[in-house]
Length: 542
Image 1 (cartoon, rainbow, N blue to C red):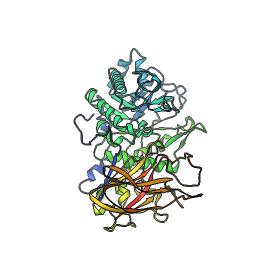
Image 2: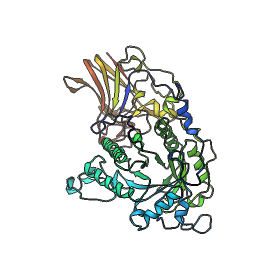
Image 3: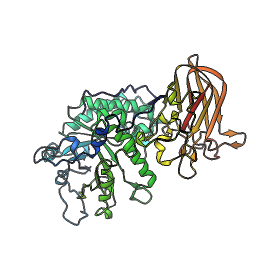
């Protein structure tokens, strides 16, 4: 834990704009001005396990994730055809063992078993869900239809995660926070080293709960015993806001995933892998350059492939300085040991897709003094309501580069454009705040392209420009994809012209569910991307 280290401002409870870019010079690249040391940290040497005691936490290079009984066998039917080993003995061979808390609650000897693992040199981290409830509960009864106040509601009922049958919660709710803190303290009483924090991705379902989630992680950091290790599972959207409170992160399904239709594990396809690599570099390793912590990479392989496939998965994770582990059980009720070590160059790709290290881009937008939004003119700051995971925030909106069909590079999706979270129940917006009032009569919005070859331009179905006048937002121009019976689709550029207004704040506003005008569809039909506002560049003129 990092008690006392508080270098990020987290006044997130009532904040909706979580990404901000200044309309001024770009950041320097890693490796400049003494950052070489931060870059090279990913190629750190491996450390041998001591004869007694344990490695330093940041030196761990093996882990296992096992939700079965601590007194059970490691495999029901060993892949290698040998005799099943005692699960506890297999766990001892790893630097870190992530176990399920339910196995502690149900075993009278749990404390002794945990201590046995620790004495063997293994850190023990136990599961707890902090963003979902495993069943419907009344608790304080102050929610809709008499249920607990901490649920996220939809149509009068707690909203369910259909994949697991659990229910999404607002992690900032004080009733929920006390439940989690009490449960966390109970788990820690078994002598474990830390907590594996699951279901942080609830913030992607309800973005306005992100401040509460960050606050809950902060409280766990501050109120649990000194030295407690906190390791979130994924939670990439919120990672940069909680990194100071946690001691690692899990990247589950980095190289492989489960095909529900076929009922087997499969390799990530090219686009998924590209996305995961960008998240690895642009979110996780961006933070780890200056706040190093281990990343645990859990992947799944089919049983019949377990004898030869883990090596490739281990090597891929290791190039990003991720500690790998593979299993063939989706339920994690076994703990096989693949018996391999990474052979690739550690950390060699750790920053390969970092947005501020991708090289210079030839500017093709308006970088003159006439464009009040251009970053180089240093006239304003830009805030957005949210940012889709993996994107670099608001910076691309004013950088002077417009992604056209000719200039678009799909490899640079994280830096060419800004995309909001995908939420059909929420308005999205881009706001420009000027240091002094400006006369404004025109706004150009360049919508974002996606895809290779002939990319799709994700223009909005509806959007408007609003100016802050006399203490309130006033609509000054509107756009709709419908023009009579004609549908205007895939607009690369939408020009908003209006009578001159004088204001120090102006924003482009997309009403909820009004994204994705990619084809002529019946009004009101929800598509995959109607919940996203997707913009490449904005220009503002007097």
